[in-house]
Image (cartoon, rainbow, N blue to C red; front, side):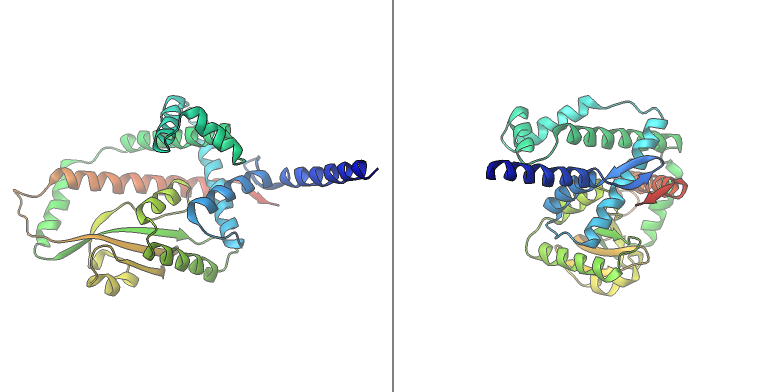
Length: 303
């Protein structure tokens, strides 16, 4: 009788848990995001960032899932093809980096409670979105010699001035989440970076997850930085982490990677490097514009 009671209680509790996991939390253009989706992504997010789950991290994960859903809908509407060959290459790369075969990696993923097929679909969507951004970049025209010449002229006019190679993590503000919580999370990340956590890797991971609006590393003059960083960055050496600082659209953390004094002339200036920087800036602008457009046109219902 006790065994029957135990199993009955187990199935009642399991059934309630399963029902809770299937609860619809957000509807994005008639496509649902469930508690199960949020739970799975939250576990991955916490593993990647080392943060604790709270209202802020949950809101960030929901924002990420909404952004990805909108991107998925848009790539589907635009007829972007699947990129399963690239997905398999990515799986092989991850397995190799961990000294495993793909089969061993899949078993480890399953054992940890994650879904291999979901991971593959996640990578597939990231590659489809990247292909769409690449298409939009070429549709909008490539970087021209005139644009490169304009940047060269500007740099030559700044000869003798100091530049810093910097990278930012910008955690965007989230609706209904107090700014102080985001700032507290950012402060915790700063402490971890200063204790040895890899800044560049974390920045890329958060960017891939739609949780970092910061740019890739770029050479900037002090007066090109957000004013909140100008004084604190002016005299720091490479490797220093600065922040967090509250900006208009989020909380920013900055790393100074390198520094240089502009002493080149028109013959020695690296036009290829300048062209690449202009291309990165343009691609970043295209992605921000598209994401903002999709978000502004979406029908989003929170439940």
